[in-house]
Image (cartoon, rainbow, N blue to C red; front, side):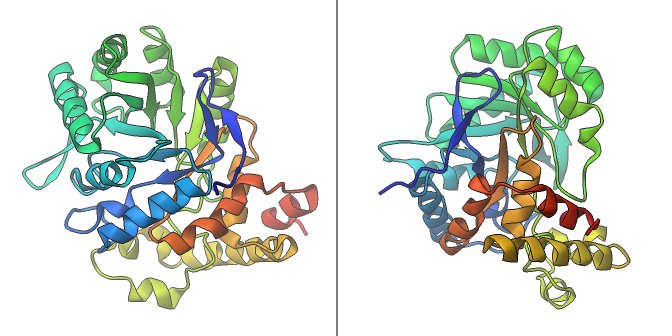
Length: 317
């Protein structure tokens, strides 16, 4: 039986989404430059289906994740489901000569959407997003192309990821920006100043990524575990996972653990709930690599943090 975890409207799209969505970055597997290490595809599929069974009704992926492999796995996982979750994917990043290439040109974006539809085994993508606004001078061309794709029925809704307010305004002048996907966590809060207030005023649906800072705030990370990460896991070489930043972040995790103990949950769920507490945020993307990871983190979807909890997290008490 499916568990109801609650839904909210994503901006003004009319889509009712679960507060937590399935993030498919890590399941792209190894063999590319921003991988999370090896991943078993059957375990990935089982994790997606477990999340759907528990009420998660959207999956976020991108063609760059595993160089198309993440989208293929998502397509396999969702094939044949009676009640398919919404699928969000992206465009503008691709592999060229062993490196990441950026393109916001119309022809490139049209090739990308066709390839994504094939890998995902879909006739239409529910939310299509510009992954990065790079190069900046092509933002208008990209957004005009996205408006075309929506008008043609290849995608239902169009959004952006990693845009600043100036870029959002430029896109809005061409066609409404329906969704925004920025990074947001207790250790990456820059969007609070301008981006989230703008999205709230414009009724842009916001789904944030990395609310647990790529696992750093999950409660499972220690200096020893980070040292033991495989070399093909990008986090092993990220400054946030190294000293001197690591000790400060692990002290934050200890405060999250205090709050988690009050609510009989996990530090990771508290970190996600903290991000969802912001009134402009509709949903949070959470990566589940195994089926057993799903249920503990879904607690974040219904976790209400009180003032005492927020004070503890901030280090005020």
